[in-house]
Image 1 (cartoon, rainbow, N blue to C red):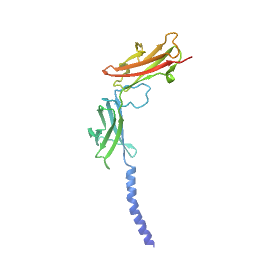
Image 2 (cartoon, rainbow, N blue to C red; image 1 turned 135 degrees about the horizontal axis):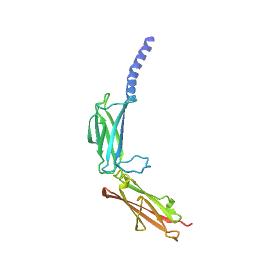
Image 3 (tube, helix red, strand yellow; image 1 turned 45 degrees about the vertical axis):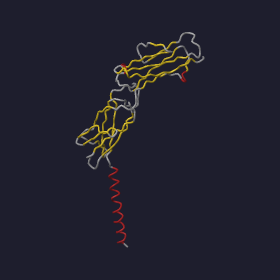
Image 4 (cartoon, helix red, strand yellow; image 1 turned 45 degrees about the horizontal axis):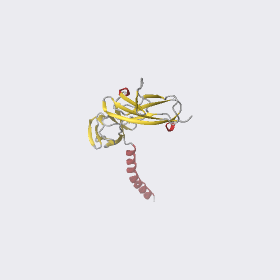
Length: 229
């Protein structure tokens, strides 16, 4: 009976031990982290989100490997980069890469491959959302309704190909007439003529042009209506 128990114990260990080894190797598998950022794109100073990529923008990407809780030095490791399955570049220690975003508004797949990493090949993929430049008119009037004899609006540009928002040209019109702005061209103040009745509407339109690319012109618009007092 004792011999039977010993045999069963040995058999159980023979079955369980490989599984434990597989689990241990999986549990200690290195982590591959890809980070990226768009270079040279404008966003408001108080914008807390990630600056998304636009067509033609330069993107800086980097990869890090963490093993056993420590950052791995990739200086001797071969690193290959792919964008939508197209080879971008790579080589020994190539843990950072700069590339231009292609000309389509889609989600790009950026893949990194370390084929010769000790213990087995490492692969990971990051997804990069492409967007076009945008401009928003901030009008703090619920349902487009205002009271009083003046209104104030602000243009907020996102993701233009400039680091300096001061190199954007703003052209405002109100009810079809051009309006000149002074110190801050992104801000618009409108003073109504005395006696403007309730129901009076202001059709505000805006064109924003990128100074280094006049073809990059975007528009936005809003309509405000004077409420009864």
